[in-house]
Each structure stands twice: as C-alpha cells, then as structure tokens.
Image (cartoon, one colour):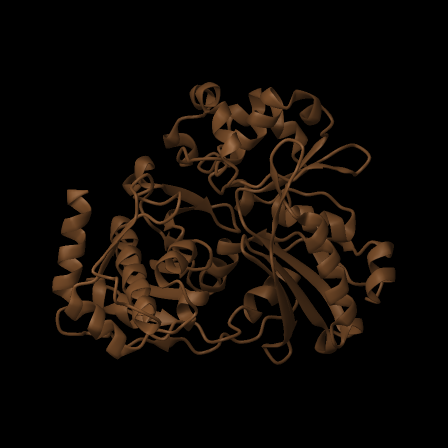
Length: 456
C-alpha cells in the first residue's frame, strides 16, 4: 500500500467513551469516526473494565469502516491508571476499574511501601487511581487470582497486544500516577521492583514504535489487510500534549486536555511547585521527560453541575453572575479539593442553558486555579471537549492573569496520529486565538469564588 493512499485508525479508549477514527494523513483530515459508551462489569475480585464488549465493538467497527482495506496502521490510545493482567497462556486474569473503592481496603499496608513523592511525583490517590494500589490489593487480598498472572499490560498496550500479539510497556502510561516509575531516573520505583511487578511488565518501547502486523484472526474478522500494523500506543492526555510538544519542545506552554478528566500540563514547568495533597503530579511525555501536571475530574464535575447537554450562552452566563449562583468543589473523587462535598448555592431556579453556563464558569475557574498553581507561562492550548464548548476558552482567557488562550481546530489530532503511526505528518492546522469574554462582574465573582474556597 502506498503511503499516499494509507489510512490511520486511531482507537481511543477513554474512561467514559471509546472512539474509532479513520484519518487520512495525505489531506490531514478525519474521514470517519464512530463511538460507544463504556460500561463497568463486576468481576470475581473487583469491578472491571468491560474489555470484552469494547473489543467486540472495535472489531465490528473496523469491519464496517469505509475504506478498511486502506488502513495501514492502528494507533491505540487509552486512559491512565489502568492495566490488564494476563496469564502465560494469553488469557485475561483481571482488568480492574480504578474507581472501585475496594482498593482502599489495602491502603493501610500499602501506603508505607510507596516510594517518596519527591522520587515518583505520584500523589497518594483514592481507590485505585494509583495503579500500584490495584496491584497490591490483588497480590495480598486476592492471592490466588494474582498468582495466575504473568504479565501486566498498561491499558494502551493491552489493546496493541490484542491487535498484534506483541507485548510492550510505554512510558507515558507508566508515568501516570502509578507509583511504579521514577521520572528523573527513568527507572522503576523501589516498590515496583520489591513487589516483583517490574518483572511482569514487558520490555519498554516508544509510543510510535510499530509492534508488528495485526493478528491473522483480526484480519479475518475485520477484512483489514494482513499487512496492517499496530503502533505501541500512548496515554490519552499525553497524546493531546504531544501535538503541541512536537513543535515547541523548548518553549514554555500549557495544555488543557479535557474529557472525563481536565488535565493541565505545563511544558518546562518547575516540578518543585508540585504539592502532593493538591493532586499535582509529574506526568511523563512521549520522550520520557517529566511534565508538571495538575488536574481534576472536569468532565464528571461539569455533568454533575449542568445536568443536561444544553450549550451555555452569554446571556445565561450573565444571568448566573447577576444571581450570584455559585458551584463550589468538589463533585468528584479526585482533584485539588477532593474530600470536600460539592455544593450549589443560588442555583435552584437555573435550568438548561443557565445550568450549562454555571458548569462552564465553574470549569473555567477551576482550570485557572490549576494553571496558576503550576506557575505556567506562555501560550495556553485548550484541547478536547472543552475546546468545543462555545464559552469555556473565552471565560478561561478572562480569568487567567497571563497567557494567550488558543484552541486547536476540529480534527487537530491528525498530525499526532500520523506521527505515532510513523507516517508523514500533515502540516499543523491554524490555531484559533481566543478573545476573552470580559463580562461585568466576572472578576468580582472569581474573587468571591476563591474566597469561598478558602473558607471551606
């Protein structure tokens, strides 16, 4: 297949949804996509990711994809804090869901074993958000099940293995608050080595490495060419970050990657600013370098406040400000204010677009706090669903003291997909500069919101 006719299939498994997108790198455009909502199932040891249903949907979607015979490379992308344990025969043992509170049962024994935060930059998080806690729970409280496992496959690489049959480990998922990695040393943590988990992780490969051709069974089921290859894959927020890093590695800039999580990553940020209790961490980029990061479960919190799919309007934001309606964190189990009960005040009469406006204002205020906590400089790039919100970026631009806010065009992931697939990358699309939405009373509202945070 010639490079000029090749398509890339990007398989993106988020916590909430899975998406399959076909990209034509020759024209730099997405040409087709489909998505599904993900579910959680109950397993013998814990709640589990529904990998069986996701795989069945993926294979069916590939079979029905237009131009499937032109797909040259499949690029897996997946969320962090997830791994699948596999036995020596290639059978799945367990695919834990990091939100299952059962993992807290192991915390008392687990916490003293963790490497110091100054070495891993991995904060202690609830439930199974530290992958190490998931593994420790299984190893100590589900002994018989854990002893069946021979391999620990990080989530993007689980999918590259299912598609290609080749096992690998990749650093962006390894460095996502797992407790398993020391980013400055580019080495496994003492915890990972002492517990024997490092031996269960396959050899490390680069995110853009091709692991091999698809399994014959995948080719037979989907109708894809047997010559189609599979890339190693990458952590989802790092995929968003990479599209900006490719041209700006030596510059200071900030990426706001949104989805279930809103993750703020500061290129060339100072790791000394990270505070463990504020859920700040060092992610690890595709080239192995640590990245100062702050985050909260922005998608979950937005949904909890908005309670609908309506879009916000400027008039609705003005109504929220004039009524003094306010949302105070936290509406999810993670982030800088985790443990505080979220509350709404003065929101009883708000409906539809007004609730969406309140959720958008809240998201902009929270994101501004995270950006300032990292001490970031340079341009601020908004990516993901929040970039498609008609007012979020404009409100954010009005709420941050420095930095130009810009959004990426629709389909802006084509360039990074081509890079990860090892195909010629299209030219970067034009970034859209954002005009701040400077509404009367907004800065006073922001000051009051921050004051209320300090009171709680």
